[in-house]
Image (cartoon, rainbow, N blue to C red; front, side):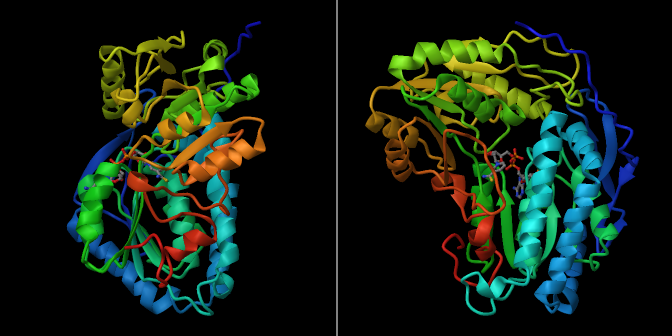
Length: 481
Ligand code: TAP
């Protein structure tokens, strides 16, 4: 049975957009010399003008962070720092609808996801780390671990507010101050977060937000006043940053790309696995570093799984991200859409078979239908390269050993999924897979208490949990260089 849905748009009136935004330095918004526009990827409407921070602005922000670090934040008792973090967490909750609508406008992700995933998890990260601020002496890093100093943080566009929370909450809890650069295409929730810092009376300079493009990120990570760099983004840029930070004495953590295997065995409950496959690759339009972008399905049930999957994909609703019925929103930018199209075309030309869900695409904005490729070999680009879009590559296997070999046959190692009813098989596979997180009979589960991070070209260092604190404390951590 097919249900018809009436439109259920979330009102955008809760968001007050300014015409232009300055940089957030030393607790206030300051102007810069040049600006760029941020648009809604669903409509291509210009949302606001945002300042492009140059090297002199980065310099000012680092100086403000240094001042706040030395005079205020590093000498404040942990229990006092914790109070600020609790306050920020509560303001995020109070302004949750505003943050969710703004995130959806600027990023293109469905409101259902920004409302139910991004914003609650961002608040949870602040609550969780607020709890740690006065207990760092019990975290297993010695009786009185010290902060590192000023942290430069660069984040991507796929989970703008959530990545900000992953970065800022542990840094502040451990006594560091930060200069953060959001992605060029999604700066607005970081700028609203700056207003939240003001509302929470956070001492000036503890959090500084510099907007801009890759050049701003480059200036930030290369700045000599930075003690630690935390980067989330592509492996390509991560490698460049690693080179910049080498022999500088800066500590570094990198959260990079992925090409996760979602492995389905023949005893898995097919309907449940299909939900997990859909969630694994179509959540957030597949703009997810840990997306289950390679489906490895046991040969004996491949036909059954694929026909169920296509049936389910045909029910996905693509369109207005502000509509509460929407499952698949807009691709974040024209550049990302071009990249997805290019990689999908390589799938066609290398001989894989493309099937896309039969959903109409809106006339304006950037869109790509949920798509699955079958007949994929391990040599195909769509099996090796991160597409970062709603495109699933399907491979088959016969034995558990073959599944492990294929799953690990990637330069990445961020995440994996396993679907089977045998607990022993789950544990065996989890011990063999070179992936930072392995989900069993579920996918894309996140919790601030659970460390997240990669192996190999997916980066090093962990975010979240007790392990994540290590990256922001002056202790010799496994992940830092
Ligand atoms: P990138 O192009 O690497 O950009 C990430 C951030 O770095 C952006 O703020 C970007 O600025 C900035 N940047 C670009 N060039 C830089 C440079 N030379 N020096 C310093 N900063 C620079 O990645 P993206 O396309 O935004 O994000 C997608 C990638 O992030 C995917 O590969 C995905 O897997 C990865 N990702 C990983 C994780 C984890 S936890 N492992 C989580 C989310 C995303 P502009 O925006 O202005 O270019």
